[in-house]
Length: 385
Image 1 (cartoon, rainbow, N blue to C red):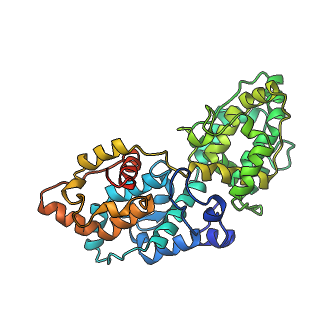
Image 2 (cartoon, helix red, strand yellow):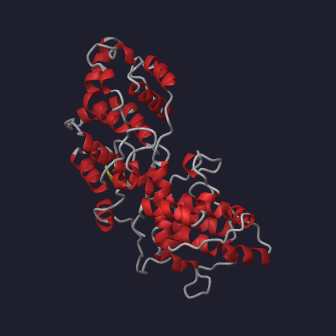
Image 3 (cartoon, rainbow, N blue to C red):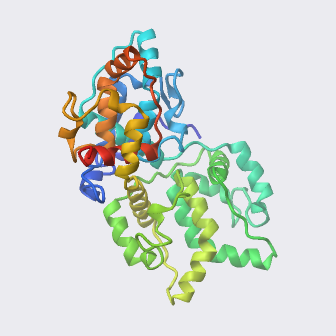
């Protein structure tokens, strides 16, 4: 199946995609405001000519990495801000060489850009149909399912469902029947790692190229939060508890990975439900979309920072050479106002001047990781004590 262009996807999903601000308000424990509108972020990406160097799913420039196929490069606002900081000098150098003007970005524009780039993570990276065909054989799927049109357990008809959310929903609802069928045939339980589910989906999609595709827009985080309680998910996945999905380090980065994770843990979850005397809930496609929206929105936030570690980062990265208390630019005046979006916007707008100052004092451009960025922001938000 040929992937739709990004602009087409955005137009299909409409202007109300992921109303993050209305849905979630502010970040837990801080004043970070969630990014804004995805479609506006696409406009920023285009008008600021980010696409001259960066492609999205193969569409765009080749000078920089394709931002549509890097699920582990930025999975939180702080990591994205750190990524932009680390590659700043290289980006400005490329822009200068290609005579691309460095256009300043307003706070609202940076918020929209963050929303757009994070939305790409919410969508999915393309799978490999050839690998999927191999998986169909090695995982033993063909022992129960065929890809022959018209067969009772034909997986080929699933190819019309282009959104991995629908796959997660169907696999969740049919898991008990599939488990029973596997037991009868003496088949071992199979699990899907990393992008294997995306590859399998890509293969099955490739078998139904002439079938009308069925799309599903992303869900509503608010509705998903309610469903999380109504469907009993919260009885096991208690916020801040051992099974808090929002704090799990191995939380899936893409929807296909989420479908794989739900399949891998479905037997364990079903056992836990029986022990608690719970009925196994079924989910409609829209309910699954809403639940997924809720899970991804809670995962959006960075972990709380540590001001003590942040002070160490401030000194280690040599920020103190230019930023000291009472000396312009005095960062103490920004107490409580610093967020990943602010850091990214400031770095972009003032980065070239900062780089020039650092060169004059013979200071190297220090890279920073997402954890360090969170701690640094916490230190600065405390007013640099």
